[in-house]
Length: 476
Image (cartoon, rainbow, N blue to C red; front, side):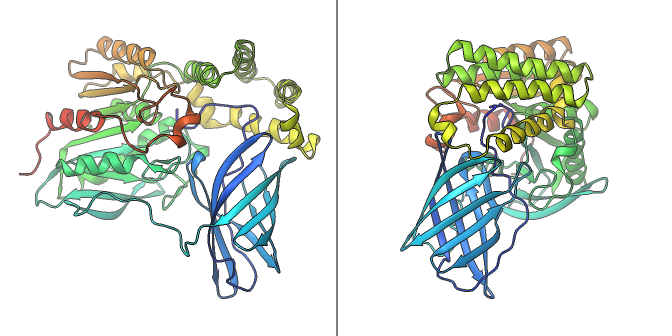
C-alpha cells in the first residue's frame, strides 16, 4: 500500500507537528533547497523561511516522503548561525547550520543518529505554487465540509459548470495520513484524476484524511472500517446537494482506498459504482510480506537478507497475535534490530551518534507500528469476503510493475471474489509498465518514484472515465 512497506532501518523522521519561532531579521527569508546525508543515504528536502513581526516562521517539504508544509519549531538566528527543530512522533529532529552567502552547511541529529545537511538559496522569496491543471477550467472548485459523527472533514468539490444534477466520484486515499490530493513524492496524484473526470462531466469530491489539513480526528487511532464510514459520510453529504445526482455517486480508491471503497459499498446499497486502483483481495499480512520481498529484490538485496526480513516480520506478527506481553515482543524486536545494526556498512554506522539511543528508538518505533490499531486491523483484514458482498458495478486497475500491490496476484484474488459473490458487472485491467502510482516505470520500486515523470501511463485516465461514462448520465 502507499505507506505500508517496512524497512527496519528506515529514516522516518519527517512527520512534523506544531511549530513557531523566535528572532529578528529577514536575511534568511526565502526558499532553501538541498539534502540530508545520514547513514549512507541521501534525502532531498526544501525549507521555506519567512520573518513576521520579528519572528522567523518556517516549514519543510520532503518530496520523497510525500510530506509538505511541515512546521518548524524554535528557529534561532544568531549572526551566521541558524538552528531549528522538527518534531515527529518518533523524536525531535535538530538542525544546526552556518550561513555562508547563499548556502547553509550544518549538522543533523535525531534519535541517536547524526548526519550532515546542505541547503542552497533558490532565489525564490515565497513557496512556489504547485502546478495546476490547464486553464481555462470547465468546472468550479468549492471548499466544502461534512461530518462523520463528531469528526468534521474538509475537502474540495469539483463541479462541472453546466447547470443540473451531475454524477459524482468520491476519491479515497491510500494508507497513512494523506491530504485530499493524495500528494505523494511531490505529485498531487488525485488532482490529475479529478481534473480528468470533471472535464468529462463527472463531479469529484476530494477530502483530507482524519487529522490532515482541515479535517479533525486522528488517522492513527482508527482502522480501515472507520475509513469506510468516512466515505459513506461523504456519500451522504453529496446526496444532500441539489447539484448532484444522488443515485449516481461512486467511490474511487487507490491502494488501501481500493479496499476501503468496496468495504463501504458492502455496507450500503446506495453506492452506484466502485473503482479500485491497485486494490487487493488478500489479507494485509500476505500483502505486507509479499511487497517486502518484491521491493527488496528490486532494490538488489541478496536473497538471504530478503528471507531474513520476511522472517523477522513474521516473528513479530506471531508474538502479537499470540497476545504476548509487551516486554517479550520488544525483546524479539530488539534482537532483530541488533541483527540489522550488525549488518550495517561502516558508512551507515558513522551516522549513529548514540547506539543506545538509536537502538531504543528503533525498538519503540517498531513496537508502536506493529501494535497500533490500524496495523493490527489491516494485518487480519481479508478483502475477499467483502468483495463478495459488492453488487454494484466494479472496475479494477493494476500496474504491471507495481511491487506494493502485485498485479496478477491481486487481480486474480479480486476477480475470484467478485465472481463468487455473483457480481455481473465488473472489469479488470493491468496497465503495462505501470508502477503503484501508474507512472511508466523501470523496476517498479518505490525508490524510482521521485525520478520518474509525474504523469500517468497512456490510457489510464481514459479507461476509467470511459467505464464510468457508460454507467452514468452527464448533464448535456
